[in-house]
Length: 228
Image (tube, rainbow, N blue to C red):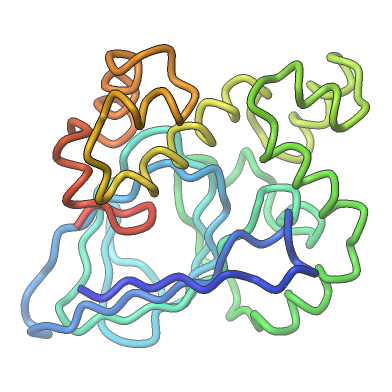
């Protein structure tokens, strides 16, 4: 399996997390088990070849909402995908399906023009600045400070533009950062401390719940937000 990520240009910082591709590179008659972990993003996905299944067969074009637990899916050995990984507020700015409607699931959608979406989002400068403040904050209090929003205002903004409460979203961000940067780490205790966890045991609990596997396994199996 070949998974690759491509960072967005600076004009899309805080709006687009990445473009990515995934290719099975195998037998078209074989099915490959995969697992996606929560990444705090909305995934706009186009399958360019092969087949995929998650609670049934998926269409060629679909969107995946925020997930708060590991999600198993399978792809045919010859499957290939290209996708745009958006921060939730970018999705709502585009007028996409309501966040509650796609929470924890996928939904078929019309074929998306990724370049047109990026051009449209590049004009949302203020929203990108706000997004950077949110994803860079280590605590909810820091979110209040960097966004300039009072606690109640921040809660209302999250309800409308993220779909979960600030504290729940912060948990997803902390986990995914630790998950994505785990491969190659030699010290799990040091990684937990660097990632903002109370201790290694705290990180271990989060990995068991949000990745479905211990951190030691994720260290060798993680590819982006996926477990191979």
